[in-house]
Length: 254
Image (tube, rainbow, N blue to C red; front, side, top):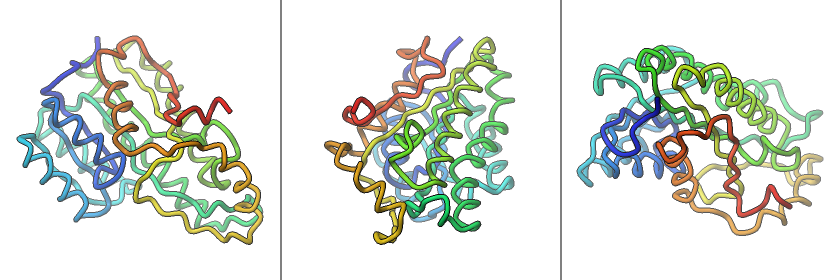
């Protein structure tokens, strides 16, 4: 079984206070889905909910750090209590690293990037799965990255975290495909969002990686990434499972 293509689904979108997450939340709501907006930034989450409601949609926000189990539990409980279940989970929230080479990454940076980019999606997926499995249908869409496909698109911590998302996506796809739950991921290339990269241009990592940035091509806008997320969650993608879809203007082909 698969989710309905349009309307009346309960959709969780993390990192929905800005950028790709906000664009995805707006697209889901515009087609009639009910959206749980999860974000660390309270103002951003409130703005997304307000935009959805102003357009006639339905949304509710949960604010907090998704690397904390208590916040994950609140997201799932609020979605189920407010909307009656979970049909779609979009694990989009993430942070960048400082483009540092492995020899220069601090313990704090490594642990924080892995915790937010990989452990948090795992925690939320684990918490949502009982509801998806009980319904016998559902879709999970993760936000990976070009850095999950190659070693030249980010620093060691971010690259490792996004390779982890690729592995998690494929594992979920195989294990739960006969239970009606599909899992896919987008792999964005350069995208215009509010995410910040604070890199020391004189360090080894940025110095090496910078040489490859000329292959990015035209940067996408957030809505171009969101359209791919919504597609992968729809019945139009009903036989697509375990795919890591580059949305990168051909960067992966270079």
